[in-house]
Image (cartoon, rainbow, N blue to C red; front, side, top):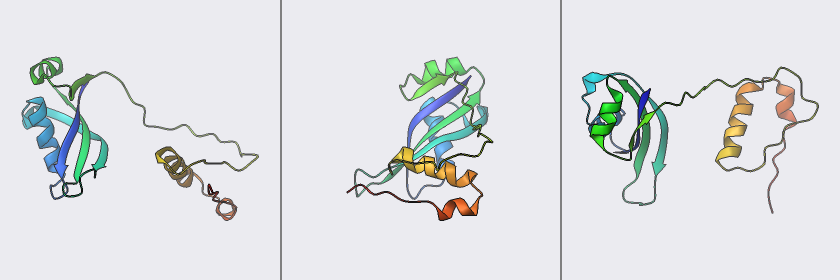
Length: 134
């Protein structure tokens, strides 16, 4: 199991090392007790123009994780037992028709990114059309 810490806010001027420091502070654990960590999510909070923050979600491993979460007593410090598989399984058959991505929101942009990373056929990109909503 791992500990997940949500809503870690740092300033745009802060270094990335500050993320782990803030996660340790929120979880009330020493940095030397953490033996593995990774950043799960990074976002920008620009709701206030005079104070733009970077917001992170971090996952880390340490000893006595359930005790650490209980001691932190925060809704942003959770014990996480989910195992996320970050590997995508792509098909190996040629598509009979061109794929369509509808929308340019977060999901549409991510779908376009994944498609761009997987398609190596230059002919495919000559046939791409962008559809706009009137």
